Length: 226
Image (tube, rainbow, N blue to C red; front, side, top):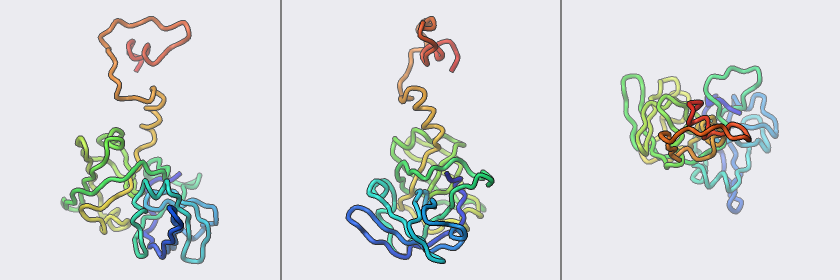
């Protein structure tokens, strides 16, 4: 598990394509101070396993499922990447719960300066937008950010100077893809409530008595329990 607080910006040393998969080597320093083979490192929001390492480089295998869902499909030598080690049990939880499992990619549609802050507007598919709420959390290329504005197919974040200076955001331009991971809490809540939050219930219908088998979601909804 990660928190979305980027520790350093690394650089891709090499990319070796193996059929539909990749083997990627990344130059880094901070995240390698205590990293071992088998450890997880978040690379632009993607949880990757260290398969080998030297003093300043680590390698990771990227399977097709990950390549197809993320911006790694366009990665090349020299690409800068956000890096974060897995959260230690005794560490501070500075961002939000980030699993490193990308839901999909979005596209930068606007970058705008606003005093000391920079606004980034991202366009995303409905499958991603359904979990995005104003003042909620979103991981963009592994960066824990707060959603400031939401429209039907876009959302915007306002980014402070510290985040700009310590991530790859300054290198982003209009039209660039970004990896997106929704807040996992929203996805779990949807699943526990039946897996289809878009279903509209008829709350005007008379409340039904609790079934003999126990309390259901429908019963709680109609009686004000949820």
